[in-house]
Length: 472
Length: 165
View 1 (cartoon, chains in turn cyan, green):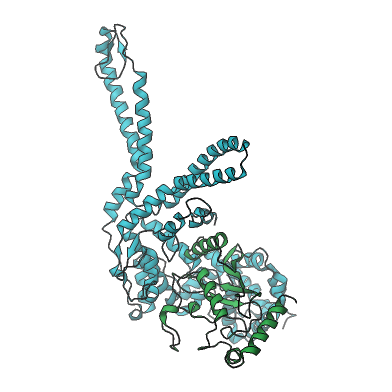
View 2: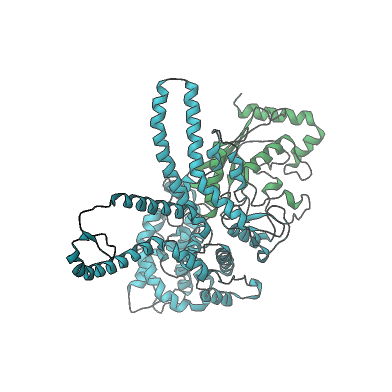
């Protein structure tokens, strides 16, 4: 979250003599994300937004957010001029802000009207400059993602400065000395007696080769962060934009296959698949619009962020993060509040457990419930491609027999201890009598008996609950 | 984990803190969760609500700003456009698309270019000028239309009570 806290903001200009720049800065913000335009695109109704923003917005309701004219993502056009304005402003911003703040401080100082203030101001100045530089760097880093290839100008200038400084210093050391020695004709700068030139030449040539090799290496590595970028943009630029499918014509299996073909995660119910694919299309196409496209891997990472914030691994309705329990979570209160529900569930489980006919079903269902309640299962599976329990039960028919064979024992091992950790407070008093969680490890504990979650076990498991409540 | 929504909410929070509109304060209840805000709205001057401070809760969806937040007053407020349970009914808070009742134009509804600030300003002007075309609180709307004096008196009573007078 920390990164979010130094977002440059138009309010930075308020209370400085340059407060009108606040309006300018706001004008350079996309009205959807309220940040500086990142790859601005113009709609057919002539409104401008970030590529990703307008694409997402259009795929939600197909209208321009500003005037609500119907529009299509395919009609968007790059606004390169605006992009350059934004980049230029971003480059000038830190310095301008530094000046503005200095001016403001000076004015305040003047208001106080003390003489000693002057000396203080001098100190302040150097501080300010240092701060300015730090700020400049951080905003620049921030904007690097935004920055297009022409946007690397500030960096380029920095580099030129450096090398200039180097080259202007060197010549000063050279002074023509008349000491009767000859300079190496190959220009290595060494001076020697005329007889020594011949043997030196061989060595010098070797040295020069080495030097030139290492020299050519240095500029290469210097330019590395720029060169590949231009390369990238030329090689990845012609990437084709992809389009959304007509999702209503595809059934879930076909859609899942399409997602797999696109090598993006393909778990979850159809609704989630559609949402994920739409997000992927928008990410991908916005990347095609960009003058500095990112690699597919970065895009996939971004999709993963989406998954964790808005997609299938997003925090639940209650706002809890999927794997982290809130610090001030009132476990006892929760347990008391839901005592009735817990009791009912336990009761149901017991009843189901009692009648051997519904045995297997009962177990499966309760594991599911535990998963939904806890959301811990999600985090446990985090690494794998195994869908969360809800998805699992949704397509119970398809691959479940193998899936659960693989899945059930692992979950049982990991489920119980961490389930306890996360939900200690309310599980404590419900867990003891609740059968399913106690039962399943026991079932899975006997290795030769592979019991798929939804199939009836051949051997009645009923004996296990004997320790639960006094035996049958 | 920085979603589009939380980034934008943070941006709006910063803007609202550093440059707040008159009579409005708003921010996340808890900085760990940017998706639940509390807002305080001053009763507009020259209305029976003047002098009152009305706390409200804003809840943002995961896909904010594509979808609007919901807003609910945490105090008693007698108003034609506020449901008896405190939920605010105002077009800017309605998701984009066609209104099935055709009461409001699409242009008044939520769009991603709106913001918390605009919502709160709209709510403030809604407080000052109720819209009785599609009332959320029918009794309040009728009272406002037919017995303005009684309406004002009741609102003033509520305000005084909320201030502990």
